[in-house]
Amino acid sequence: MKRKLIVTVAVLVALVGAAAYYRYIPGQAPRGQPPLANFDQSSFQQQFSAAAAGPRVLVLLSPT
Image (tube, rainbow, N blue to C red; front, top):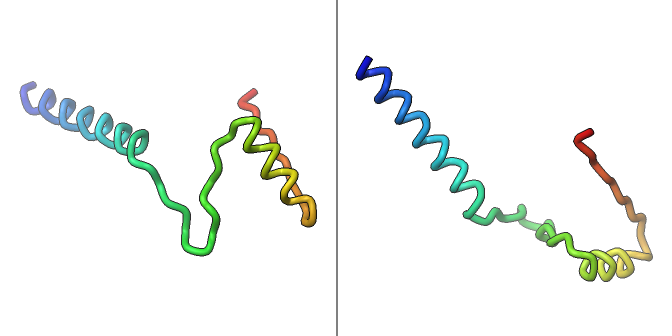
């Protein structure tokens, strides 16, 4: 019983740690690729308009 509790707590601590790392440590884009932009309306409109010379694709994903 005690061993099962220790393993359960260890797994929970590992999951919480991984979730915190994923949430609070910023990622990096690969070399040669521009970083991802924050999605707010003003920066989106500016970037969308700046790319008028090339093809632009807008994808909307919905969980439903």
